[in-house]
Image 1 (tube, rainbow, N blue to C red):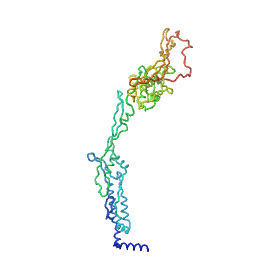
Image 2: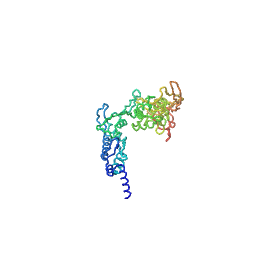
Image 3: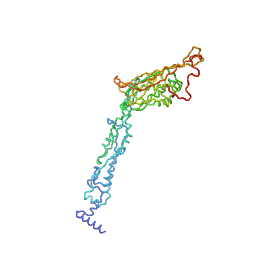
Image 4: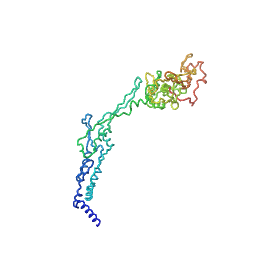
Length: 481
């Protein structure tokens, strides 16, 4: 109690010393009107009661947050689009420091308020901090104004015309909202002081756009390397029956439009399985134990053999290839590629360094395989064959009691066998730069079977007739031809 009296006495002595009575000090400090020089973000509040000052500051902030923008056309004309306020677009006006200062001045006692006034320490300019939620701005801008921008990008495409030319349809650029450009425009309108009245009418906002490229462009397609037709090979199956013709066509369809990536290994077994699944096989001659025999799938090796020759003409790396045990009629010996499920496959590597596209054409009982990719225009490949040996067929006579003595009937035409070497020749600007051996292939001969009367002397004794394979003896898998 004594201390409080001493403080009061001291304060009274101080106030009297400066010529202010205690009653005057109470009146001086009792009012919460803001002192001289009190501003918030440039808004002068001196002399205003604290509550009125708080209301003014909050109203000004709300007015600025409610300012709206409206998209206009390039000519400044109105556009039918929703108006959006600064607050909806993510603007936040922070004047919390000034508001806190007003509330402190309002809530302190008369003595402290009087002291602040006497020291001229109650004034000051309190800043405003404007921030934006940019993620929210982008979301709102795209949702609200995206319909104003039309034009989706369209991918470029590649096609091969009937002249085997690779042609491109250019991509189409799209248009999209330039969100960054819109944000920059809106920020030019943001408040820098509360001393200026907020706009009552919507502020104009141009709708900037940017061009958007599609995922697939002509440049990207050209980088893939399918520049031109680099090889082509044709074989004929004009003498084939309906079953074999079906099988050739089925395998060709399954092969068509096969696309190989750089260094990818082509696997003919996959094509065979795809063709069987989609089209099925029909009965046609196959090679079984060294003889032509009716079977399922004859003809599919004409497709692999035709592809083999196209691959050679493109200089591709051959990974796996074997010749038929018997020579085929649609290709010279040494240039065929057989297939036997589970035993023999045909594989090559796309060694062009770019993508490789395989196209097939079946027309007038002719099969053509075309390869499209990358190959220097001054480089060409050719095959050469060297026949090392010819094994003539044997003539074997078989009995037919329907034939009269002296008459005969050719049951099976004899075909010679061969030993052949095949080479791949590379030319650059017309000059031979490489001659590489591909294979040495052996083809067995096919006996000529001639039926005669059982009394014909050319027949062997019954026990010396044509030998049959021993039961269970495996002389190789079924080879479609």
